[in-house]
Image (cartoon, rainbow over all chains, first blue to last red; front, side, top):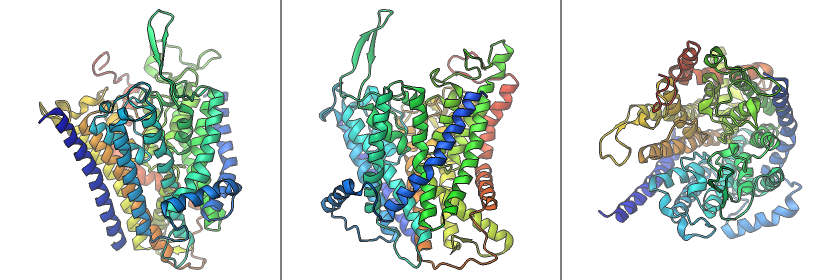
Length: 35
Length: 597
């Protein structure tokens, strides 16, 4: 894999894990509402 | 301790006491939707914001919608900042021609999260990596919005106590807009102008190249500093325009500017205690929280200041003169600015970690063990000692819920706070917020200490995770513990001696910041939603009065006991043992130099 595409993959990775955290946080909101 | 040092500390505290009521009154009027003296100028702008963004200011939100709005807004801001940092080379206001490739993906993630969560942990060197556009639009805008989001959350939690039989706790977008337009922007304009008058720079020039007296070349970094500096302190953000933060003469030019900066940190958090009292129709409740915060604040100052003024006994044994005289500050001046001396550095360190500011005017890593212990403990207690803008108040209310719950257990009564019954739901939520903070700090720190990286690993250079630390022994443990404490507590100050700009540390510290911010806010909003639905119960002879000295002492006790129980073992292995070893002649210096053991 070229350095450029490796960096694009890393960009995608960090964007995805950021979005993933906020999805987890939203599930946490729902969980706190039910608790 | 010197008389001028003590005078400085007491003058600071007196001014904060004097500012609390007017600041709090203004914020109470603002968030209750009443008219303020800024309305003639700002109200048309506020209406325009609602019109452009499609917000209906009369529409109130259930707590889940409030939290959802907070999350959506924060996510959008973090992703936008990530993009700005990665493509800064294509954007304007970049006279130094800084390229996006200076920001590796993990560093951009860490920084975007850092500013989006009001942490401002800076593992990068701003003047060597960030364009003016990136600093202003990517980072400084977050200083306003993340601070406003914190204030909005605190106000929503207060509404949980002040409302009865209500399904809503306000509108996030309205609270966010009002906090930004009426409070943070006007205050920042005034503060920036005052800082400029002291010598803080504000320009868009390319860096100057000058010849030094020795004939060498030096680059003097420039930039729009004052505008970022003002909100950095007022919004308890702490991210410096320069790497040296408030120790840099362009950021913090004079001792008077330094004094103002510590005032800026506390003015809004202190005012919010009065806002709380006003909104729950009993200002004594607000003053009780203020008193509890003040006790812990003053206790912290009067540990750090004497510890730093006493200096290092090992140097004294070697014959180093460490007494304060008319011509020298004495004590431990390592890592401190000569312009500010020991009391102003000790006060700054305590204030910046009581609040979730994280700006520094001295290196906490160079403090004596006890001097370094206090800033770390301040953050570990949840930064409830005035705290971050908004975050301090809702954190303190979390402790208040626990305090009345424990008091209720002792006498066998259902606890009440502000005429609301504190039941299972509120206690569960308060405990959840508390556990999230402790788990993130301790588990991430343990992971960082124990991690070992293989050869060829892209996430960290090979070898132990402790390789990023500059010192060994208990001081090294303090450096790692402080890093995750600062990140989880959304403080952002660096202890120093920690060079963790690697994918592993950038990612884990980034996640610690997200956890510390949102997974703590959400349970407290849930508790507010639950409290808002409740009816008021009349005060009876058995009600524990929460506006008197007994409650204040009880609340301080709960804060200290809960904090001590959670972090005491880790602190014993770090700064506490280091203190005793120092008194027995053992120091922990540079690992590389190995001058000492």
